[in-house]
Image 1: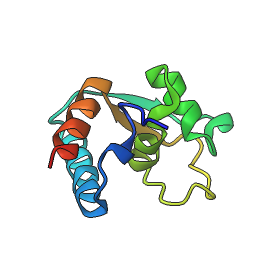
Image 2: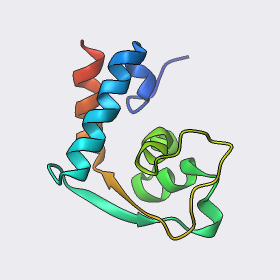
Image 3: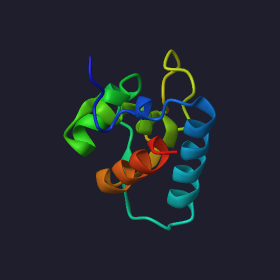
Amino acid sequence: MSLSLFSNLQVDDLVIRAQMYKDILSDVNSNKVSYVQHEIKIDEVMRSDLISQRVYKMPDLDWLVDLMANREDRAQPMTVAQTIKLPSKIYVREKLKQYSEN
């Protein structure tokens, strides 16, 4: 089975993937990249894939939604009305490409 171009599993090494997560969070939180804000709705609290579909028109960035919502365990709900910042697909693809080549 081939991975989506937007899968975080494109970065095989867990340490390198963790560094990518850190860089994405840093870039978004310091406003180095553009982002959209999304307020989590009641039907989305357990569905990062649904948020990804609504924002990016694809469910593949569910891992990014979890990252930006500071959600480490998918068994735990996100907070209703929490506003999260989601960077552009282009930015995310560039980061995935950069870190998967290392």
